[in-house]
Length: 540
Image (cartoon, rainbow, N blue to C red; front, side, top):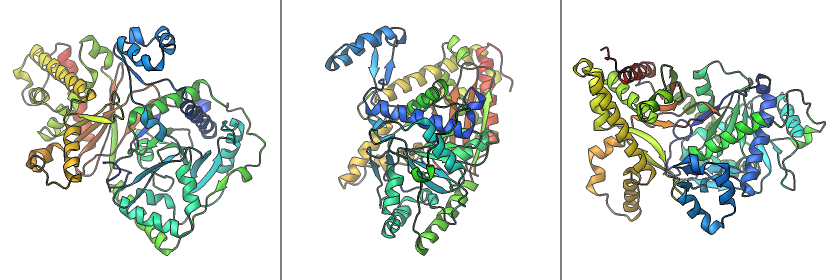
């Protein structure tokens, strides 16, 4: 599905997740933090390649299975039996087949269907600054990580390079419609750019160094989700983007994998770079000749390619100009209070979106929440459908006639919503959702050349797949903020977190929707929900 989509990857598929700052302020210096993150990412990559990365495990009873004693025990069980040992302790290993695409990978534009490529022999990092492309090795000929002081020296060299911004920045091409980009990439190859493109595609990952600080959360979202297009290469499996104040995020191309793999990378890089940094702000770069170690890539452009880059920039600017992003934090309660009432925190967040949208627009709409199916081999995601008869009933009660119901009656409705949401979540995680099954049947029919059954032509099916509220959550100590663009022109893209004592969401929309008003409605909805849980009447 992803590879056949022809829409640009930026603002359609690529999400971002920003890192929290390093707890030690002086370590947020751009050169220091970039060096430490590169080294930590390379440590993570080498752990994967060596087969030493601790498996992803879903613990149904973490008090028994997520312990050092259990890990020591299972380590000595033969691999053919270890799965059964974990099963007996209600610990379920999750699929990790996506991880090999994390590094040295890119999405290549092709006519009608793109291609994923991985070159695990490459040892260099791709660095972008001011629209210029640089590479240098981060692994030596034996596969060892280059000394941190040398990496620091190479980055310092790049940061001090005065090469002007290219008149025709080639990164814009990766923001184009995919068939258009496929044609232009072929022209790049025909014009003598085969070797430089191979260097870009095979790099371990991409580091984008920006020359400005981040002003606030809204600026952060715009910079990390799309930026200006000048200093990005959206096709890499992932890019670490870093402003000159050290504010950092991961922007990742979505076709190869999902948030679970990226979250593991982000958690490990953040933990390692903050707790075990390779360099300190006082450390000096190595005395090496970075002018020989660092190569600035030169692209050969003809008039057709220059025109293509200009058009790509125009298309990109026009799309970005219409996108609004804003965020809010509800600080009157969070996971701690909700667990006390034995109510699902995720269900409450989703319920607030339902109530909020009804409050803003007077209707219930198709809603998507992503759920990992990594419990299955090669599992990706299934859809949770948070909008239900239960959420609709509660939404209408809170918005239209709150005085009609007592706090106890409203509380019971909230608990019904929570229980049903929990049921939907379990079904989706266990492969019992309906969206992916129906999608697969539709693909099978199309590939066999059959006419689609009437079911797929029904307007109701089209309506539930026009996702107005697209939502996703990934909570972690490493993450400050995350987000993505709406999946339809009249939708909202809702990234959210439920923490112990607050609930936050970061919302994007195009011009037809009012993000600020939606956030106000969601905040009011959370106020009402927590008021009900406290046994107090809701004010209309």
